[in-house]
Length: 346
Image (tube, rainbow, N blue to C red; front, side):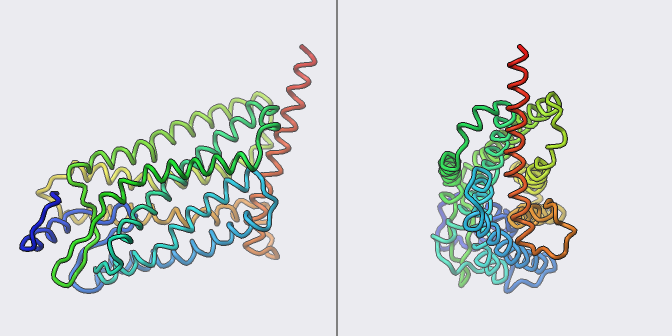
């Protein structure tokens, strides 16, 4: 696509925009259509995003309330508070995108066009970076328990989170920079005007948002498994199930999005309206968006009191996070004891 269009070329521009996923950064597949949303795929996308918005605001809001106000501040609560904030901010912007899908008309201005794309990409980077940080933190706690016990503090964890958000914001700038709006008759379109940088943006997003985090997390988990087996601490691995689920869910939700984005780069311009590919784009976008509301329900699912109906949903979230905090302390104490015995024996 080119960035220079005259007023007489808006019809050609609209046709070009129809050939691309104009909202891939927003994780919402906006289908350009005449009039309001009537197609089955469009209606399904709207309904699903409304559900994500409601569940995401409620679930992540609950986690923010619990980790930020009810529980004692710790390293673990700092990690989960950051994850919840990232997802909550993204979910809060969904009504704007839902309105755009329904009306096919962007009425929120250029700033919001750029800001929504920025928020979505920020959500992706900040979420995966926090998951990487948690994996590294778990690895250090088990591998170097004495150092971890002396150095791991909530204040230092907060500083690490701020740095992760700062890097995430820097990597999200291209998503906002290449976002633009254009008028066509009485319709305003918010789209990605990549010029000749589409491939650079896609591969940068794949490298820093998936590949490097995946390799880092895989390395950390390999070290963890070896260390836990060596110390015969298998009975304390249950808290790691929460992190395993969070990480698995993230990659399950985002991997299709990255794959589709790469395929789109190499897709023939002669077949831009392939219905199968368009459906794949919609499903990948929905999966990516869904990741923003799933985490709170994973906390509740993994809590010990899952089967106790007398506990509320909030209690389950608090129980899951508190359980991991206490287990992390027990793990460190036991590992210290093992290491001390070994040192004495030597």
